[in-house]
Amino acid sequence: MENLFSDIIITWFQQNKRDLPWRHTKDPYKIWLSEIILQQTRVTQGLPYYENFVKTYPKLKDLAEASEQDVLKLWQGLGYYSRARNMHFTARNIYNDLNGKFPNTYKELLKLKGVGDYTASAIASFCYNEKTPVLDGNVFRVLARFFGIETPINTGKAKKEFKALAVELIDFKNPGLFNQALMEFGALQCTPSKPDCQNCPLNDTCVALQKKQVAILPQKENKIKIRKRFFNYLVVDTKENKTYIQKREGKGIWQNLYEFPLVETEVEIDFDQLIRNSDFLNFVKDQNYNMQLLTPKVILHKLSHQHLHIKYWLLELESFNKKTIRWQKVSKFPFPIVIHSFIEEFIEQKK
Image (cartoon, rainbow, N blue to C red; front, side, top):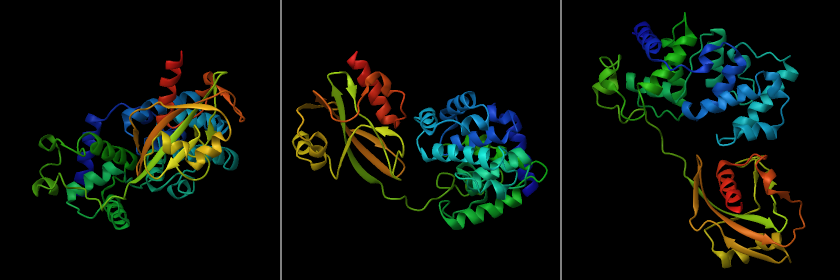
């Protein structure tokens, strides 16, 4: 069955694969870029970012010599910004410490920051034809359904079980081709919802289809509890048409991106509660100000394990004792997309 499975998947791939730029190269730098960008990102969303990165940083050397701020700005809107920071760190590591040459084995690739089992397997098999299987969400789904595996895929047990199965299934002549085919099959044919089982080349031997389990496989354990956070952003606007922004520090969300001064609270607050808040009072101190709510409706911004409830407050000041910048220059800085979108609308309204 194993060889037959591989043959069917590869034949389907050759007939149905999408024409994607990273499929026309064996350059590990470009394959690595595509894999990092496509982590937790749909191809349609990630493709323009890949093209922009390759255009802006055509060689590893170019990315290694770029500033983190420029890399984050180019990444803006993709989310999971630790991917961009790790990618930049790794580019510098390879360029400075490995003579600019990518590791060419799965084990060596795993040593790179931001490169886990999946990415190392992808690069090793696509570029160097190493017989190491990939496991991404698409692969988990195809294997879980075809073999009727009910082990929750977000557990350590599942990773070992599916990895062992993938090792048995992989095409030893063309491991890279098989890996790409299996991922594409999950992305286009064996989709998360409403897969086209009637026209599936595996439908006569698919356990989930026979047992009517397609809709419930693969399974996951209970999701992590979502944390609610309440952000009140103080949008400084001076008479000189300047504002104030600051870089987010620490290991939390949006590290090294920029934002407006933030007052975070345990629950949603109104105007009267905000002006009595100690963080707000420490920020404005004895300065005269006018303030109004810019967003009548709370903006809900959903992250993987956090839901941010955001309000923007316009804080008009006659003068300000911190370093300000002109509104026209704000767009040069990397912001979380939810703040970037607000800034674009606000600047347009100011014209």
